[in-house]
Amino acid sequence: MMKICRCAAVIFSALVFFGLMAALPVQAQSGAQSGAKSAKRDVFEVRDVKVDVTAKTAAKAREKALVMGEREALRRLVARLTLSPERTGGDFPPPKDISALVKDFQVLEEKTSAVRYLATLVYRFKPRRVRNYFIDSYMAFAETPSKPVLVLPVFQTAGALLLFDDPNPWRDAWAARPDTGGLVPMALPKGDLEDISLIGAEQAVDGDMQRLSAIARRYGAGDTLVVQAIQGIDSNGLATLEVFMTRYGTAQVEQTVVKSYAARTGESMAGLLRRAADDLARRVEDNWKRDNLLEFGRQAVIAVRLPISGLEDWVGLKRILAGIAVIRRADLVLLSRGEAVVNLHYIGDPDQLSLALEQEDLILGREGDEWIITPAAGAAEIPGKKS
Image (cartoon, rainbow, N blue to C red; front, side, top):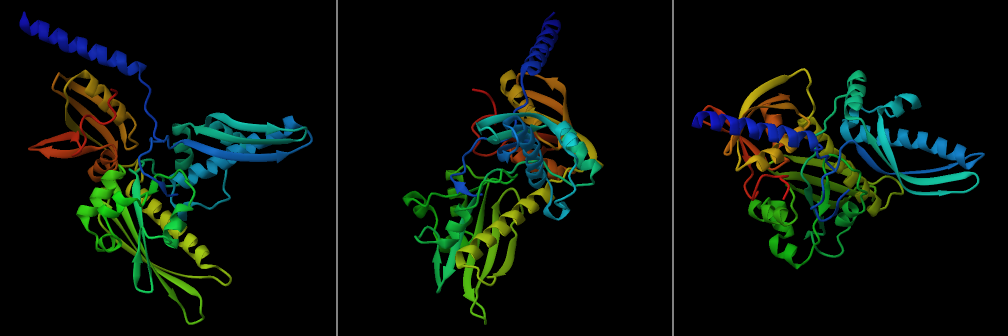
């Protein structure tokens, strides 16, 4: 009789779970800005698309503006998800095909006159349709967003190292970069007294992991990016930069990129610094995408145990797993008060799966012959669980 009751309880819990999951939406994920703690963005949502069109009538101007807005939104989405070398810039589908990729759009601001239409728009794209467009176009792409990366711009001039000092034109160049909505959100520390007490320019350049980790924790960042720019001058009297860029943290193996830049004729030092910052940021984005390209030809499944403290934990975990691009689906095998066992169907290799889970504060590891997913160190509870 007790066995029957226990079985009934498990079945009831599973039914409750599936009922809840049917009502739960999949949580979407949302230049260097001050502070790294920000809400995740939907990678298929493109914000702040500005249009300004003049035509014979306001209605014609609006119609034309919306077509232009869709094209610009798709251009930004392609730039966000694909590698720079793969983008040709001109091979876009016709307007009717772009419209088929759009799920919906939102008008944030708009102004009209008799012949002019101005607006700021938000476009949301259909993930499956966009993936098929990339596949049909033979474009490699990634969808996994990185945790925020904290940028520490160290400027070396006349033998002095500047980080939080004022002025620091290298820091200003990174601060001036617009938020492109890429897969690697970048942020700058405030440079206040607490930051100064946590790390200095020399410690950042030396790769002091204890201090780098401390300042990353303050801003909720996953990694830190130390970019040391050394100012120089060439034989023609033009400004030069030699840059050493290293990303520290758990997401990638520590790797230093060395890049040299020379000012173009008529280019100011500020312009050179901005160009270098933009180029390096693109390199960071492309490196991340290469590590997370979706490989649909490589599919695998593993059984994973997830320790939980109840149904609420499992609902939170299921929501997270449903939003990870490399996971195709998670089949529930066993659900009890203390654990859930699932078959994870994913694409790519285990390292790619592990990296994607890390961005959600989940660690994939082994306990004997079993795979297990646990919250990352420092995560007080199941990430993403509703309170």
